[in-house]
Image 1 (cartoon, rainbow, N blue to C red):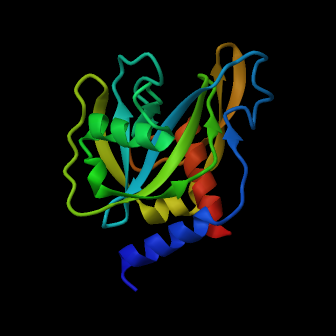
Image 2 (tube, rainbow, N blue to C red):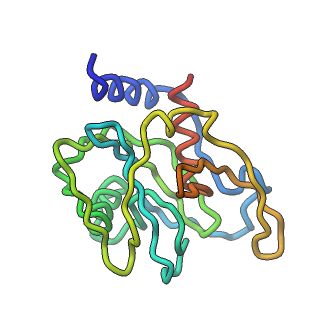
Length: 196
């Protein structure tokens, strides 16, 4: 079996593992009463070499400035669903043609502290892909190997003072990139399914 075929088989098996939704509040108490969660989709896409595509968000953005993120965003009125939103946003943010993405399925939604219900869309990128970062929104596009993403030992807990309270969160650093928060939590959920 080729490395790409092995990754596909492992991702297919991971999608079959039962698991519930996750939340930024899992480690820090319940979500505030009345917090409305807006639907969003993010693309968890691996290229033919088994590399996950991630972005470093621009520092001037309103939500999650400078953070490491999966390509994606909120569901717009023209989007059929979270999958469509993830594919549209990936095209806008990193120049990935939706026709190059084979969607394998979706992981359960992840609720963020900023009020999004984020559906991770798992996919494979077919053919060559040369990312083009969206000016003003994406500072950098980079990749992380499947082996790092898939290993639960890559993740650990840290704490930070946020809005006057100490909050715990997951991290999975890779080289100079500090993968943390919702992105790390979504990837940890995938890693746990891959290890099951």
